[in-house]
Image (cartoon, rainbow, N blue to C red; front, side, top):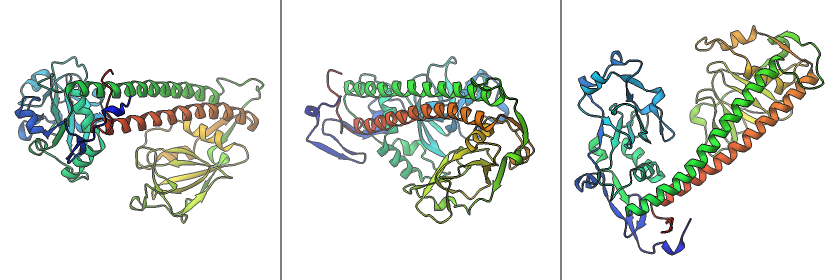
Length: 411
């Protein structure tokens, strides 16, 4: 899609980098003054701001910063106001097609308001809407693309102060830089990005479907509801500590010791149940290459199968090594499938160590491992493809919105 003939030799310097000489560059306030967009608005501040007691089970969505996730607006996680209470408010009435930008606490999150069944949705003081006025000069989704670009995000972080108290108010937002090509080229840019978004969405849905299939298969195989061909022997029951040894965890790293450029993954349970950091230091790391273990998070119930070199966060995770009666990866799947009551902070292991598991012979365990591992491998391949698509989309977005890559005129 790159047309080298359209690469411009003449560039203009801007705070967002070099852009083609013929592109428009100014501020958000310039867009307002030229009646290209309406004046950006956030939600009601002070005493008029809705209280928790105003929330109802259904009604007008009341959008907070945490409802904007990965470039999308999640209305299912919103609080709601009655139509009467919403009508009593003074500002922050956002409509279908508006571009939302989070500007308090979590700064830089952006999304487009989808088709909604209510006349409008309400914004909190954490979120601003941007609304196109002159569609012959601006494409709303180009606004979203520009806001999502790395240079714009870096600028927002710098101006807002960063951290948990990050804030960039409406007055400061009107001074934000803005650039754009002709509306025709804006639409071409949006079409290119939409192509990648559709591919990403399709693959994302496929991965979720594969996960659901694997989850159902795991449930049936690990409970004996479904038996693999050639196996009919009765399963035996064991207490947890008859199946696993609880190992002593090596000294953990604190979050300030994490190094994003490091080579050794750090496992902890504090960051949305994922590997959260890296280190280059061998000290306090452990190699499980020849004796894989299961990592169990007692706080947020992280369960990971580890077969390699890792380090650990400085929190309450536990390491389990299988005994002779259970295969380690089968044990991992068994623990992933086991439901522990919602017990609150630091009590999951109490229920786990008192649990009784009914399991098949180690030979049947190995066969179940193979089936579930094959499913995991298929999902991992799809995840790698998804990462490639997202990286491609990110590269295109950053370069298209600044004119480093130009779209062909016949697109």
